[in-house]
Amino acid sequence: MSESPSQSQPKSLPPQLPAPSFVGTDHPVTEKSDVIIVGLCDDAPLSESAAAIDGLLGGVITNLLEQGKVSTDLGESMLIPGPGISGDGATLVLLLGLGTKKKLDREAAFSQTSTAIRLLVSKPHRKIVIALGELLQSSDHDAIVAGALFALEGQSIYRTKSPINVPETVCVAGANPTAIDRGVILGESINVARRLVNEPASVVYPASFADRASDIAKEVGLGCEVWDEKRLAEENCRAILAVGSGSEKPPRLVILRHNGGRPGEAPIAIVGKGVTFDSGGLSIKPSDGMVDMKCDMSGAATVIGCMRAIAKLGVKKNVIGFCGLAENMISGSSYKLGDVIQTRSGKTIEILNTDAEGRVVLSDTLNVAIGHNPSSMVDLATLTGACMVALGNDVAGLMTNDQATCDTVSSAAAIEGEPVWQLPMFKLYDEKIKSKVADIKNIGEGRWGGAITAAKFLENFVGDVPWVHIDIAGPAFADSPKPHRDAGATGVMVRTLVRWIENQAESTA
Image (cartoon, rainbow, N blue to C red; front, side, top):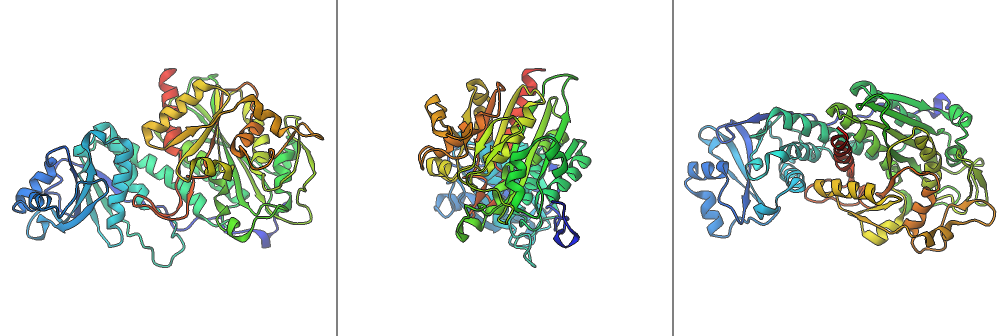
């Protein structure tokens, strides 16, 4: 299954990720810039910067508010000439409605900053000042920086003229260097995950994904181990090999290590599904269902983004990331309906649908993970359309064998503003994946409860490790843009996982 030169694809990821210079400023109003962004709340007086600009402009902002020409409603905006036209300060002022001040949180800091930046970057601006932090807690200033970076990355990476004009400098009012550094690390790490997903499958496939993971590991000081098809065979990872058997691009398994905790301390494990393209295999998808299937490795991309962030942040916890990588294609060597696969754990799987391949890849990947004796484990996967039917496109589904661990993940998601919802894992669902010819089958009974039966399948491979399965099929990839983000990859759950791991580090310090 080795690649011939003619089958190899470019392994570089063009162009570079957006990387403006971020600096703090204590004098946002007099900072010479192209644009200053100020927030307006309906339950608070003008912020310090907004009031100063209002004075310099002869009460323009106050008059616009009184006349109802500008709104404080969340996300509403207006661009007006600034004091810098005739003196110091910004040439333009972006007035951004933030709604109710008492409701502002990290999610608002992230998403509303991103919304503001996206309103501006269709035109070139060398320097942008963000003064939204005056209405937010200082502990959320890093989310402002991360949100600004998030706004600058989109799916149009192969357009000859980018619709996003990246500024040279972004000044964040009141932000200290620690908040700026943290925000840059988070924003960049989210964008790393998004870029991996947005690249076409001809560029990101198992071997090139593994190469990129190795490069990132070297950049940030992570340990990295890559299992090729020979090592996978030696390790009896027959399930990963089966899913990848129809492709000319062989599977890989990537293991990333962050040794931030005490020597010998049990690590946290995070596991990602990395199906770099999913044709459905012999259970082939229709064309419309296949168009965006480069996104089926979003779970693995999230693992890469998270591991990069915790390494650069120096989180005091041992963490190991696992990415099971395969391309699900069709050929004479494809795995077939009716096949029985003996997994690395020894359990056997009856294949009744080759398009239910992610859970098959994860069966071996999870088994490798529990071999490292983790204290707890999370997996992320674009696993089921059924989860989207249940929860929609914006909410990730949580399923677990340990309620206390699930609660900590849910709490981290709530802080970061990434919506999740727990689905039940009643024992009655176990019956729905029992096979007559093998230990389990890779689909449940009919169309009902598909997200849960998929999780029940995975539960067979986690042993007694406290485990949370996160189905990100809905929020991982967007068909259309929103004010705060482009269509395409979203980098969902990177912020949540970083927060969750940091919380675990603090609880064991």
